[in-house]
Image (tube, rainbow, N blue to C red; front, side, top):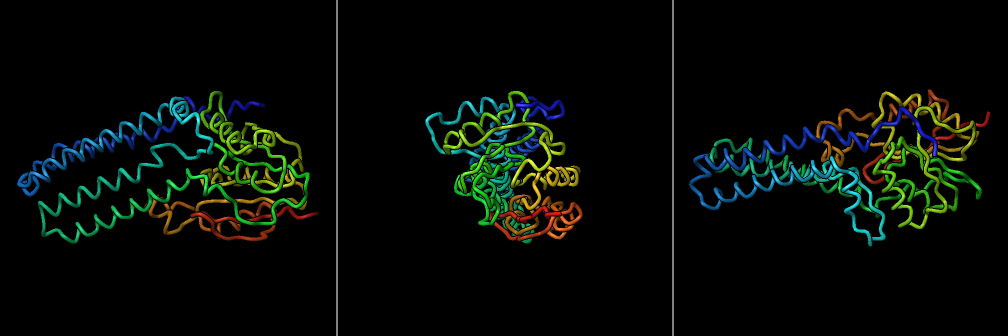
Length: 324
């Protein structure tokens, strides 16, 4: 397995921004535990007074637990059920459960506001709506861990029995398993894995659970400088990778075209603006590129658009490298 000195050391740094998320959760929990019960409307009710202590303590515990899990990916992996033969995907506990904790906090604030300042009912109404959005978002992002959603659109991607497919940015193998469910092809599962990267261990576990360990070869390196020969692949798949690499999209697209054989096809799956992702990401969804931008990027890099559509809260386009 080739190495790349530029590959990020995910095992060491984890998700650094999740420390900030954890601190915000602890601060919100302390407010619910200490400040809110002191409000006149809340303190007059034994049920509300005790309830906010319970909710505040629960939010603090959940925030601490999720941050601890994120900071210790190897321990998190080791504690997955060893006898569970199902593939397990996901982006980490903080990302998957953060919207749920946020929904609980906002709902609790709405109750406190109604009890202490009934005249501010319009604001209370907005908070209840925001809490509902967070709960829906929690449902959306938790679907990403389900093997039931590890599917690709039904497209004419692989058109020869001896094809070799590159899964670009495979992560824990969600897209790799989906490719393996199709025609019996050879698959290269490629990502910027670092030494001891927990995603690589999770990938290998998922391949074994799906019975694909004999068809898939994990490789690692830079996504924008692929360590493969020209025209090495008959098809390339990239799921939810390019949308998170704004600064590298052009170089990645250009290198994919290089390693793809003439007439080969490139399936790009990305997150774009939609109501379902607004529930999960809220205003952050505005930073996602629209389909028009992706079509332009593909055209500028010499691809022909074959087909496009939506599946499981994502947008996809099937591209083809023209035969010159």
